Image (cartoon, rainbow, N blue to C red; front, side):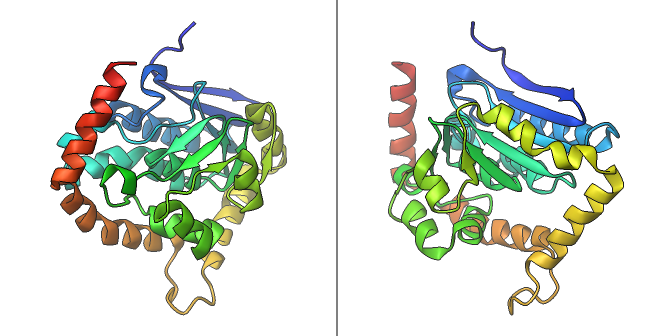
Length: 262
């Protein structure tokens, strides 16, 4: 049976599993889905019974990126609304794990990068795809990806269109490990924060964020949320400009036609 459209949260043993579901669109981040994801994350943060969060997608995909129809009409404010969901994950004060069960494309790659740890299932695929759409990367992807896997592998992904399957993702440090049942593995990984005092978990993650950029000459005391915001702002103007290009319009139309014939 096809999963219903929406964002679903299941809490058990102090671990919340948040599932984005829009199977016909491969769980693409529509505005409603992005807003629902942001709400789900906020609910977890305010729920004293949640100590860690797992993010996944309804099979067979993880997240196919921003909804192309919404993206085509969106300008700066629209982009920020589309990004609100994965930014809520990036800014989440609780430990987060993405259970990447299928394709993570474009903003879906951003969603995976927004978590503290990524685990992959056998069918995981990480595909930046912005360049192939005639679209400048957005959401802080260039910063997040280079920070996660280093400049060479990140540039192979963004500039050269390299797609990382599950094994390549683990080999390049994009994912921690590969599991047949990736959601169950992610829940098991959350056992430590689930068993620890919640305030200690929150404080420890906060400290890791504060110290992550210590010693980096460009940081000057900025938190990773500040640096991510700066990266997003840096990318926003060229991304908006790329949306006005005929190349993007043509590729968007071709992608819509391809989707409509599936």
